[in-house]
Length: 140
Image (cartoon, rainbow, N blue to C red; front, side, top):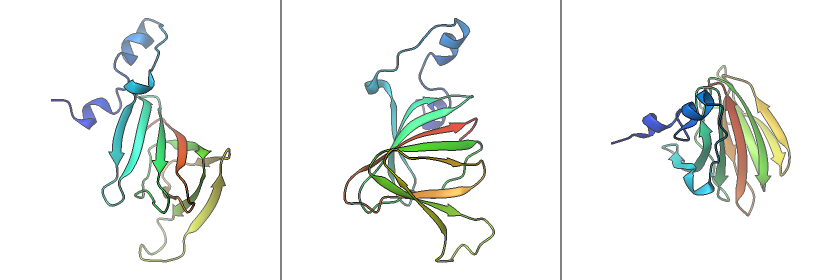
């Protein structure tokens, strides 16, 4: 039985062969890898691609919800496709119990870069769904 770890980093199936054969690969929406990310604050994440060079996906946040904190092995660039999000940067030098954090409001259509190694989380403070397109390169 395949586990998430078997497919994450190797998505979509056939990516290595397509690269080797210099072929284009159509990724139908129904073949995207959808999963629930996070244990404390489960969040729907859909990976369009996830391989050794980059990871691209979409995260949906319901109103009033936020993601689990995360840190990546590569730079992350994201764009808010729908709604707005508050990006919270969790500085590793501050007290984990601190109430104050660095936060940025990112509106629909805006883009943001999070350098490798910065712990962060997303919050949807709006009344509707927020949708984020993200890319992490090279590693999650």
